[in-house]
Structures are given as C-alpha cells and as structure tokens.
Image 1: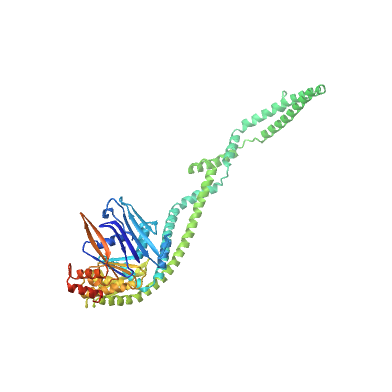
Image 2: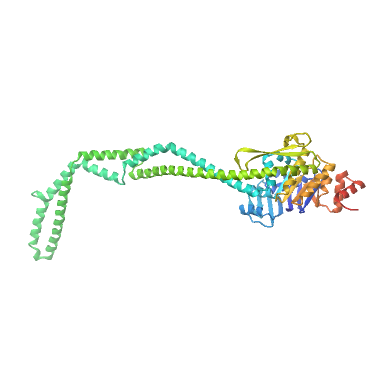
Length: 553
C-alpha cells in the first residue's frame, strides 16, 4: 500500500505531503483545484515521462517520492531480479532537474525508467475515466479471464518457456542464414581446399627446390670449378699438396736444431691434413654434380604450382598457403558443425513446442472454466451499480499460432439492455456504462489479485442518485482486498471513505498553489454537504451529509 506521497515543485504544487489510510481514501475538491495533479505527480514514480514545463518553479528541480508498505513475496522476487534491496517499507523517488534530465531511485538505488515502470505497475493500478478505453484492448480482456482463472503460476511458467522458445527460433534462423551463406561459398572453398591439399605442400620446400634448381641450371660451371680446384690442390705438377709435402720434408730435417722449427713444421703438417680433406671433398662434390634435364623440368613444374597458388591467394610463402588451407578446413568443418547444431535446435524447438502446446491447452481449459464465473460475477456487480439488464459475454477462439499468452483469443461482448444482442464493448457502451462496467470488472479482479493499491480517478462521470450509492458500495467493498484511492465528485461515493482528503487552491498574490489536507469528522460533513448543494449548504444538506456518513445526531 501507498503510505505517503511527497510532491515538490510540480504543476500548481509547491510542496505537499499526503499520508494515506490502508483502506478507502477519498479525494475531493473544487474543480480545477488540482485533484488530478496528484495523480500526474504519482505517475512519475510509476515510470511515466516528465516535462519541465509542468514545474511549479522553473528554477528548482521537481521531486516526487512515495513510501510503499509491501509484503508480497512475488514483488520481492521482482526486486531481486533487478538487484534491488527489498524491505517492508520501500521508497520510490523521481527527480527531474531544470534542464529536463531525470533520475529514478528505488530504495535510494538508481534505476532506469523501465525498471521503475515494471515495479510501479505491480504497486498501483490507476483507473481513470479515460482508462475505460483499456476495456476494448484484447490483452486486457484476456487478463481479466486469466485473473479469475487463478493460474498465474502456470501462465508465468508458460511465458518463460515461450520466451525461451522464441529465442531458440531466432537462433535457428540466424544459424540457417549463416549456413545458407556458407553453402553459397562451400563449393568454391571446397575446390580451393582440395587444390591445396592435393598440392601436398611442405614447409621450406620452396627454398630447397629453388636452391636445387639453381645448382642444376649451373651444373657444368660448378663441376668445372670443382675439378679445377681439385687439380690445383693435388694433380698438377705445381699442385699445392706435393709442394707442401716437400716443405714438410725440408723442415723435418732441421727440427732437431731448434724447437721453433719443430713447432712450425707441426702447424704445416696440420694444414697439409686439412688441405688433403678439402681436396678429397672437392673431388666428391665434383663427382656428385650431374646435369639432369628431367629433374630440372620436374622442379620447374613443382615451383610453377607453388607460384600459381601463391599468386591466387596473394601470399609469398608456403607457410601462408598452409595457413589458408587450415582455415578452409575449419570453415568446411564448421559448416558440418552448424548443420549438426541446426538439427539439434530443430529437435529442441519441436520438444519445446509440444510442451508449450500442452501448457497452452491447460491454460485454455482453465479459461473456459473461468469464463462462466467471470460472466456471472461481473453481471452481479453490474446489477449492483444500477444496470440490472446488463450482461457480458466472453467469446474464446483459437489463435493461428501459439503466442506469449497461449493459444486463446478472448473477446468481451457487452449488452446494456434487454433484447440487445451482445456486441464489442467499445461499440455499444456509453461513457457512463463503460465506467461502471470497468468498475465491475476491477472489483471482481481485486478479489483474485495481490495488487496493493487501486486508484479511481473520477470514474463516476455520468452517474448520480441511487446509482452513485451503489457504485460507492462496490468501491467500498474493494478496501477488503486492497488499498483504494478514489478521486470523486459524488457525495454518495465520498461518504464511503475511511479517510477523506480535500484539495484546495491557495491564492497568494499573483500565484495560485494547490494544497491538500485530511478532513476530520466535522469537516467531512461540511465537505459532503457542499457536494450535495453547493456553497453554504442548508440544514437539510447537512443532515443528508451526516446520513450518508452514518453519523448519528
């Protein structure tokens, strides 16, 4: 329930604090005094957007704050879902600065307007004379039946699963689109992959082939140079090795005369051994050099393939080609993986659909049972509010596809008079009839819902006399199930309240402000009497007011 509402710097209100009763709260006042301004301010902490042009003082920010006493565990879970602390007393606050920027808080934690609206919709239901348009909304008509069906847990579970179902459908569409795009490239990528795979490329192969080709193309000159080098070292008359042998022999003859000669000769013998190895290796290399035209052609063919592939893929090495080959392999494997995932999701969607269809069937059965109860219950209240021949009829048809509410389409038909066939409610009901019909529906729903607070904003338009008394009785009954706030201009309804608040205008120089005060018993009699007969009511009006209020003389 709404315990207290604080309004600062909004419309005609400079500063107002309103403490409310847990039962039926009546708000009355002069026309234009600002009764509905209260609701405008309240709507701000229920997530509605604001405009700075409605500020009382354009130089100060507007602050609306509401204190709510809550005990509903379902509301606690809503708070927890949004990372909000939940207390027995919870505060919603809205601040709008002079530059139009808005901030919202729940229990002093900053929240988005979306979150504030989600919470606000679970705290207060505002029903105004214009809100009767809501009764023509198919979603509202369905909610009426669902409320009386009492299957909120089942409906919540269904909606959760349906959301998951739609998410899986969206995922399936995304995967199928991706797979279709991949298949458009699959043949070409498969060709590219096969081409690279069949090439059987090896890392560093290109460098080795290019080196070998260079040697084969220069085989004759290489062979000639190696052979000449060998001859100069070993075979010719003036070859290096025979001459060195002679030098070693000469030094050997004098080694005994000086250790330096011996050391020098030892170095020369080492050089001679190294040169013999060089000569031998040169000879071996020369013998291995063979001019091989067929090998040259083979290498050229292989390198042409490598160069062609590099040019096609715009790279410069075999390592890069192998990377591309691996990527193509991954792409093709992912396509197969996507196909498997698509098959898995299709099967999951089928299972979810079957479960949803069963749940929707249970919802539909419950609604069918609730429809008769709804028609009867609303009909009884319509009689109470002065419409003895009025009745409603609820048609239930099946939708083409499952939706977030199941598979039912609910249509509310209305007839105000005997002999008048029921028709779409928005087409056959007058404003006053719509108000009373909505009141009847809300009063029935109130017995089956945990909504803490219900607000009626002048829904009594177009009624008077005995009908007003009956409407007041119905509104008065609502306080057994919830807190009710009713803005009214009818004394018959105003007299039903547990608490009565009077909205007034205060003229201060050139500035008009709106204020509100709670009336005591004596002031209530005066206010009701004025509603009955105008300013300066007579004795009969005063007595009538006391009678309406149930005050004994």
